[in-house]
Image 1 (cartoon, helix red, strand yellow):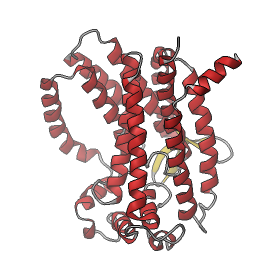
Image 2 (tube, helix red, strand yellow):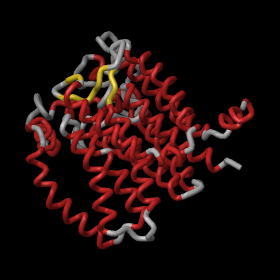
Image 3 (cartoon, rainbow, N blue to C red):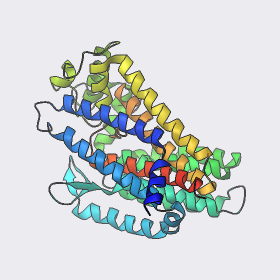
Length: 365
């Protein structure tokens, strides 16, 4: 038993883990700086506790054969849907949204974050069971419906940002699973038709964010305020930054939520363009390490799991950093590993646990 434990620990992807810990540590330092002398001043050590818990969770998930997890997908999916429905009724309301279920000692659980793992496993299982080399229209419709149901429940909370993170997993899966060019054309046309219709399903504040995304100056004190202050903070950092706890936009509280949605803006102000390049470089290495595990996966299911994780991570980084410089609408999507939040951090380490799970199965004799 001890030998198996040692082998399991030895064979983990330590490069992947080290990169994740470094990025999280940078986030903790920035959270400390951004919340200094505020009601969130204890957030940095809570994030440290979540980091330790995340590493434990990652190791635990890596030990359960992912084929066993794939076999339990229907159970995970149904239970997840039931909890999402429950959240709509008993979830804690914050800023008008019911996204969190209260637990104990003041902690809250965001189900939608962990449902990403279910979506990754769901897509991997479904596409692995498809016998043909090419997907049929029925396959696309069925898989799309299975993903759309939790998305609809999450949008009802409302949480447009998190619901959109399920889309890259689906698109990456069907692309790797045998998408035909005819399918791509039709999907593009359907999306072009449905997107305008989806406008009427958005809340007023969501519509305002999309409108002001194109020209924040139209509402500088309202919907455009966040983007304007974020761009000022990033620009104020210059090449080398102003130093930890010395960012004026951050410390004088002009920059909103600098420890969550706009943490990269606060980081850019205090560490400059050079600091942002370092962080983006670390994310690039992290993503490449995940892709490398996908290439070395022992089977199709393992490859799809790893690529699903990579798709989610890339989408988060792309949207969050784009949001900070006004190139993407403000959707509340956190920067993985850096933004404050227990549910977000734990879900990322859980996904990295899936990647290590696939790696360990490759090394099983």
